[in-house]
Image (cartoon, rainbow, N blue to C red; front, side, top):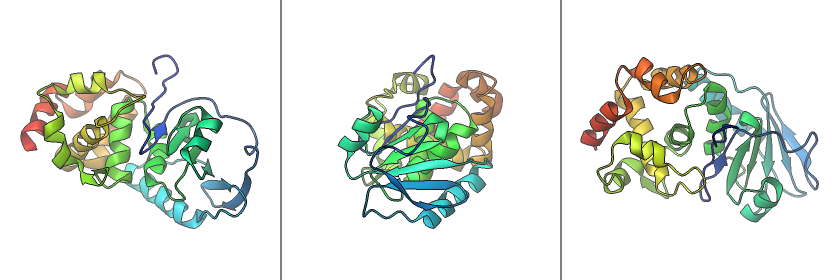
Length: 231
């Protein structure tokens, strides 16, 4: 949220936010079960994490976005309730500390790995961070359906700036579909991933609205109208 730049997502797909690391060493009950160049993987006894597969996915996202992710601790849990005990957020996945910690119930969460890279890119806000993770990490799908098929019935005639402003980082719900669809439109029709990455980086020096105008040459609502017409 404002002041600590938390970017939160919700229960089904996961959460992601900038916050202090939970603790210096492994969490109680966890042991390192695998490691790679980019990841240290922790799990409870008997759980397995394929660090090589995760590392390959993270490397692919780094290459696509032109951004190094540094090193990340990856914690695997059995249930969202355990994630809640450890992080304070009931979710299937949470990315903390600007991308340095992932807490998830998935042994291979591409959604959270996109957040790991996205946090290094910039601070465009929850709508764009989640849109990027849905587009890249979830292959443009939300709850099993293509986001471009879901978006038209969710727009409710609102301009994009309203949708971005009303995106509830704590309970985004169907906002995932709208965010994923719009970010997908930017990638497919407005300059590709390189342009999107440039927008993210520009938010390190300017507000998201100003950065968007600088990079795309139009306001959020102007590009939003083009996106709406394309659906």
